[in-house]
Image (cartoon, rainbow, N blue to C red; front, side):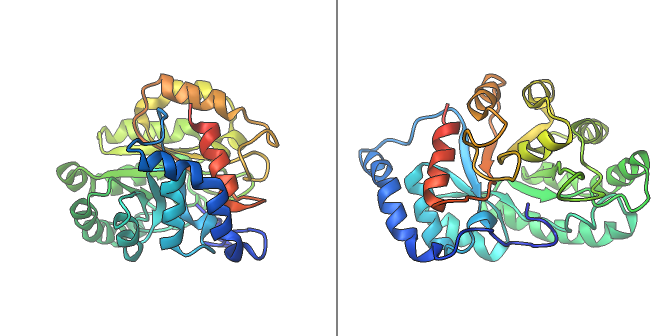
Length: 292
């Protein structure tokens, strides 16, 4: 997710929108030809992309690029945006849910508001056939991790029966509290797993953000392998800087993606990096790197 200081702002080079069409023609022509021959782009991971990283491109135009590259959907959209994605045969792979990064489920004062919004939103998600709704722990604001976990359990238990009935996943994102989201509570895999274990619902999962967890704890491959039962969604991003996932950063993404495949993961891998060059070319590169 974008920083709460700059919500929805894509830090991209200037003059991007005017070059987008030409970039798509250069980058995606081969993918279009492959699709016209009747096949999908090969690969064992279902790849998606977070729109906020590219939101200077109109969503309908961006969806065309997404399809041509071979991704299956778009992450982190509000309800008015769903139809644009669905109309192009794509999936809203992660819908924006109730609350925000700072004011989340670890504060019982938020529960009634969050529950009401969840109960209104999830039937519409299910009717639209979209699988996932994101939620956040919220910032600590002086609470201990144990207290915050208890509050999250109490609040989330109120919405999970309907999630189970409708088949919609409630997915809490892991963020780093070191650089981007100071004071955020769900900042360690172990805390998120403890929450999932307490809730004990097949419809509650974690969003493991590789960028955030590399900053907080590292040990990405082993952590994914050990905890995949509790992980329903994955985000990419280069470290440092949250830019391209190529050899300019410290993580070996082909090895990470192979390890994810080996676990049998059947959720979505969504790219959430901020491109520093031609955005469509960078997205295509990220797709190819992860297409193991």
